[in-house]
Amino acid sequence: MDESPQHLSPDVSQGEPASAPGARRPIPLDGLFERRGFSPLWTTFAALVLAFVLFQMIISPLAVVVLLLIEGVSTDALLTDPSMLIEQHAGILLTANTIGQVLGLCLPAWWLARMHTRRPLAFLRVRRLDTSFMVPALAALIALLPVVQWLGAVNGALPLPEVIREFEASQMELIRQVLHVDTNIAFHLVVLALTPAFCEELLFRGYVQRQAERGLGVVGGILFSGIVFALYHLRFSQILPLAALGVFMAYLVWRTGSIWPAIAVHFVNNAVAVVMGAYIARHPEHEITDIEHINMPWYLVVLGGCLFVLFVLAIERRAQGQTGNAPVFETLPRFRRE
Image (cartoon, rainbow, N blue to C red; front, top):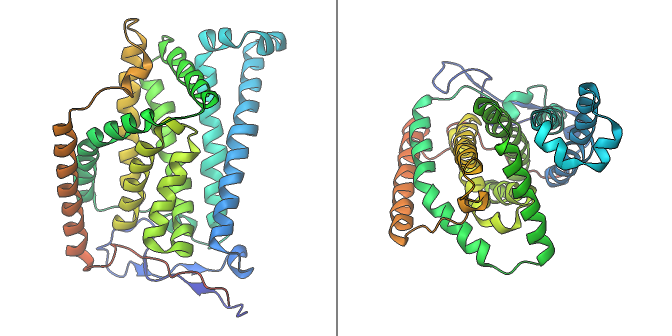
């Protein structure tokens, strides 16, 4: 196998807009994983397992224990009264979750990208964006919300094992208790909207999508990224709406060549859910699950779908006006083992 560094197709340098003169240059595929010829799909699945174990099973639980012990909570209380921990130390639990996302999702995504190239940020598509894409991207999200709500209702009506429904009910109860605690809404937005938007996008749209595109092609990579994003949340009654959002965000990243539109869309979507959840949690006549069970009139679903298509076409026109039919930045060549 040729040991000389391979290169991706022309790319915009980190921190430079697409219009910057001389900004395009290839990303060298000179990292360890490339020299060893590791398959993109193999590294993708390995990344997902690594991130899940680090975030869910090691870093977040360890951060919870350490922060609570620093706070003076006894080890007996940690084991015998978890509801007390939620009521009295919700901020610590959310902080631990944030630490887990940064150390278990964000940093591994950067490290994995570094194993492919000496320019990991460009590999992850963390680069300056033409802000004219932001308005149609956020408008498309708003238009998509009625469709997402309808997909949630369809998904929720599908038969699921009782054990899964009980697991999801416990998840929603935990969210309700956390949002019911009198903490600053700005804090909730940071830990439940902003941090997940950045960390999850860096992993799923930055690394996973990039590698999936190399192994499955553009369409396959976009679909794979969206579906895995939905499954990763362990909300089986919401797979369809989460997948729809994931595929849309994956499309934005590919079409604009930047991860920032997906981060913005992810943040706005989460922020809306946090604000609505905080309101419902403080009104006993409502349940937190009411957010997912709002009946969406068919005409709003149709209207939202039509508007969504129009806004996506606006994104397409903007992108093609800059680069023709190619994506704004690069599409990596399909991986072929030599």
